[in-house]
Each structure stands twice: as C-alpha cells, then as structure tokens.
Amino acid sequence: MSRFFTEKNAELIPYTPGEQPQDMQYVKLNTNESPFPPSPGVVAAAAQEAANCRLYSDPESRLVSEAFAKSLGLERGQVLAVNGSDEALNFAFMAFGKKLYFPDISYGFYPVFAALNHIPYTEIPLREDLSICVEDYCGLDGMVVLANPNAPTGIALSRDAVERIVRSNPDQVVLIDEAYVDFGAESAVGLLERHENLLVVQTFSKSRSLAGARLGFAIGSEALIRDLNTIKYSTNPYNVNRMTSAAGIAALAEDGYYRQNARTIQENRRFTTDRLRALGFRVPESSANFLFARSDRLGGEALYRGLKARGVLVRHFNKPRIDDYVRVTIGTREQMEIFLRETEALLKEAGI
Ligand SMILES: *Cc1c(COP(=O)(O)O)cnc(C)c1O
Image (cartoon, rainbow, N blue to C red; front, side, top):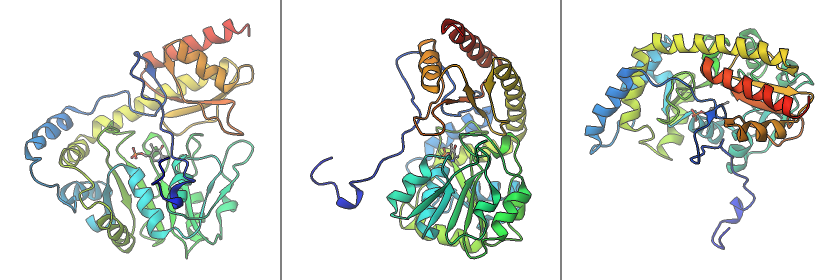
C-alpha cells in the first residue's frame, strides 16, 4: 500500500480471480469458461465492428439491449447492458444496497462489492448439505442477493422458492444472479411482471462463450433500470464497447448453437457426476456448468495441487466449510475423461 492510498479503502480485500496461467497448457477447468468457441457470426461481427472504433460506442447500447430484451419477451427499458455482470452487481449494490444479505458460501465478489461500497452485510449460513434454506431469506430488512444456481455449489432453487423470497421482501430489492441459469435452472425473469422489487442479472460469459468480451445484463422494472442507469452514467457511460455489442447481437442471432452447447455440458455433467460418485466423491446435484466435489479420502488442497501437477487445473477455496471441496468446470467429454483419469491416478498414488 502506498502512503497515498485512502483510509476508506485500506481494509479492502480484493476479489481473487481464478488463475489464468501462462506457463503451460492445462486442461483448464477452474474458471467456468465455456470449452466451446464463440459462433462464427460472433467472430465476424466483432472483427467488422473493430473498424469503427474511432467512434465512441452507443452509451445506451440500444441495438444489443433491444435484441436481448426481445429474446426474453421484454422491452428495452427493462434491461441494462453492462461490462460483464460483475458491473451490474456493483451498480445494483451502489443503487439499492443499504444492508445486504447473502449466503456464507456463494460468489466471492458479493462481500468485496459490499466492502467497496461500505454496505454492511450479513452472511447467512447454508444448510449442512450446502443448500439454501428459503425461510432464512424471507422478511429481511435489507437487499437479498442470491446466485441461482448458487456458486460454487451448483445447487439451484426452484422458481417458486425464488418467488416466495421476492414476495416476502416487498420493500427490498431481491437480486437473483443467474450467471449459470442456462445450464438447467429455472429463470426468475418470468416473475418480473408480478414483482417490481425483483432484479435479475445474467451474463454472456458462461453459456455464450464470451467471458473475454465482457457482456452482461441487469433485468428488471423500468424504474429499477433507470436507477441503475443513473449509477452507470455517473461511472462509465460507454461501459460496453463496440466489438462486444456486435458480438452480443450475433450471439443472440445464433442462439441454437449455444443451446446445443449447454445441452452437451449437461450431458458431460451427468457423466462426470456419476463417475466421481463411483470413485467415492460426494457431489451435490449441480444445475450449473461446474461440479463441487469432495473426496473423503483426499483433501481439497491436495486434490487441487495433485491435479495441477498432472496438468489439470481446478479451483480450490481456502475457506472454512468448503476447503475439502474442489470446483470443477464441465468441459468437453475429452477434457472430463482426462480429469477423471488423473483424479483416479492421484487417488491410487495416495494409496487410497
Ligand atoms: C461468473 C460469474 C459472474 C460474473 O460474470 P461476468 O463475467 O462478470 O459476467 C457473476 N456471478 C456469478 C455467480 C458468476 O459465477
């Protein structure tokens, strides 16, 4: 820390992104990226738009917002395009967060954005089986933030469960982070017409193979989206760049490709879950593009290190309650076979 760093930020503990190593080629299953490339139209559209970079991007992101809203059966004023859904989370915390409630085990950025914006927060413990207890989130006196499916557990709430939480907090914004919804969970978008306090956040980083382009959306009532725009225009009016907007529009036009990829991920998830369980792992049923897995014979840290030495990168969280687990992104069938082969070899090597 330099002597110039402000006191109000001195205590900040920033978010730790998953490793993006350059030292060798890993089977990379640590940051929940898609193993599939963007569709051909996306690459062409982004390349073509690069020629217009002399000009600022449209601060309203009209074209991509309109295309996205249409894909959900909504109006353009009900969505806000953002530079990755992390930005939507930060904007929403800035706009609506007086007090926050989220699970003790969830996306690591929630406490970071809360601290950055000096918003007090309460972490509500998940149940022993890592599921969310719906009653714990009913009738609270602050904004509720839930990832659905939750990360890093992969466990999803039903739409009815989400609606119970939204209905029981009529004077609070309930933010549902649907980063992984396309891999088999029920979206809360259909609840928007009944609940003005619901805000949904989605991203093109996972199911749409655009993590490196940075595109996400906040979705809610026109009034909530107007408030988020006030924050956006006070922060970064040109938050979505030209190539990314063009890529997003093209991705929406090639939706079938991404749906098929999501189905393939679901098949590979089934395959990997079953094989891991046969190896003695405990694996909660996941609705996301990753698994949260725990061996009762080899700790999470040992699994992570052992797999890394064998060229397979997974994510380990050095955090109470979950340090026995690793989070494994679902990749191609070939990648999952390598992961399973190396995991089995590791267990054998450990004499288990
Ligand atoms: C990946 C992820 C995000 C952020 O994605 P962006 O790349 O910023 O769009 C948000 N929430 C959760 C739970 C995630 O896992």
